[in-house]
Image (cartoon, rainbow over all chains, first blue to last red; front, side):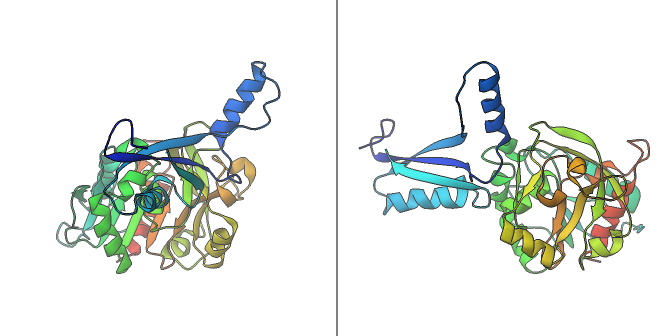
Length: 87
Length: 238
């Protein structure tokens, strides 16, 4: 499906988050606050960043292109993982 | 401590990014105490002037967008810095400069949000690690007291990389207590193994979160231990 914003493009969603073994103080703060204000039963909470890349359809191997952008730029392989999908 | 005249002074490039805010402090420290006027280099440049070393100052380059140091790591000038370092050039990255060096893969690891979530601005004690770099050799026997000022200074590297850092003697500074002991209480930000600064394998690239340039005048906090660190940086290429 074409990008809703750019008809000559397809959208690729990249979600970047810290690796599970890496402490995320922001996620912990949010989760602790949820518990404190009365939202019981929240066992876990992840924070991630979502990017949407609108890539020109004429780009060869657009999916690979998007993945390369995510791997080399949007995510830091030292501390983060990413998921990518075409919207 | 070294003191230079204008003619004999080393040439140090001061890499300026939009959002760098410790550049003037660095220049002031080097000029007043060592007689070295730093050479400003704007981030849009593709080449370095003739320099003996480069200095990446602290600040919030590119507003810390994407990740601290990530956009700066891809700025035009960093191609020239990488090339300079790959030929054995010396570099010092302070705070945001350290973040830029890791994001540029000139130093291993990453700097993440502080464990306690807060921006921390205070003096800390440091103990030098063991290794063969000039930093460890010159500073290994003394306790240092330097200020930190960061929200994302928690050094992180996975287990294998951490072992390699220790095995190769690349841990330059660790957060410590007043007796020089690195422990959890003296770890301000949750850095793995209390790591505050590391050096590259060849010992010529140094990144640290504390600010040596802010500890060069007794009027500003009492410690002048930063002078020893800056002096050692000069030794790394002179």
